[in-house]
Amino acid sequence: MSELMKAKEYQSGIHPVWCAGCGNYGALAAVYRALAELQIDPANLVNISGIGCSSRMPYFLKAFKMHTLHGRAGPVATGLQLARPDLKVLVTGGDGDGFSIGGGHMPHLGRTNVNLTYVLMDNHIYGLTKGQASPTSRREMKAYTTPYGGIEAPMWPLLYMLTYGATYVGQAFAGDAKMCAELIKGGLEHRGMAYIHILSQCPSFNKMDTADYFKSIIKEVPEGHDVTDLRKAMRLVYKFKEKEKEPVGLLYKTQRPTLDDIMADLVKQAGGSKDYDIRKIIDLSHP
Ligand code: SF4
Ligand code: MG
Image (cartoon, rainbow, N blue to C red; front, side, top):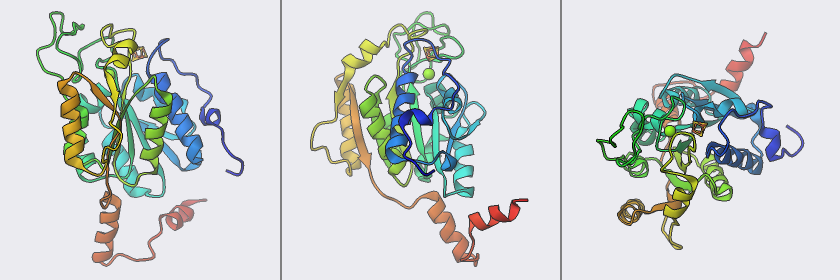
């Protein structure tokens, strides 16, 4: 990569197939923008997803990519990151994929601090399969699977990821491309597990949580918020939720050894070669 890349040059050439007005367009534009701001070489970028509307993102991005099984983007990304710690690993997906089918994986991405950036587009519904209640659906929402309203309270993904040890946690509304791009950029720069929660409307199947609804419930993280204080970040989420608001901005950021750091240390302790170089191994495999 010699010349400066513009945001649109990160487009793969495949046009998104999302419905008109879908929030995922905003998240995708923000990803392009963040990549251009960081001048990330597409040859060193891998976008991994599971299944769902937002999980189609890798098709639209100039990068190496894997469209994996439903909910399994996290484990695949972990394996890839450990095998190729030199690459930028970006995971993209939705609320159902991440917190229902793949919900068992999320704590482990956080607690092991895998060096990746997870952009989760939360539309409070299963869009691809045409409107079933998801783990973040409000109880009062009547969906295909809940015609009388939900029976479970929605989960709080931000609190969940803070609790389980993600080292960079932020939230933005998909309609605010600037904030989305800033958070994604910060996540890609961060060494460790970065979790970026994007409130993303699904106009086709979630008629309650519209773009206007999301706009009406968001409130920026107060100026002066100490992003290094985990308890303050958690309290902020509670406080906002009590007022039926969602905090947007960077909530938390800290540094802790990543899984690949710890594994490299273990290899050293076990007598592994200090000259181990994945690049040399890859070169050896070239014809
Ligand atoms: Fe977006 Fe919903 Fe259409 Fe899926 S169904 S592309 S989430 S608007
Ligand atoms: Mg969804």
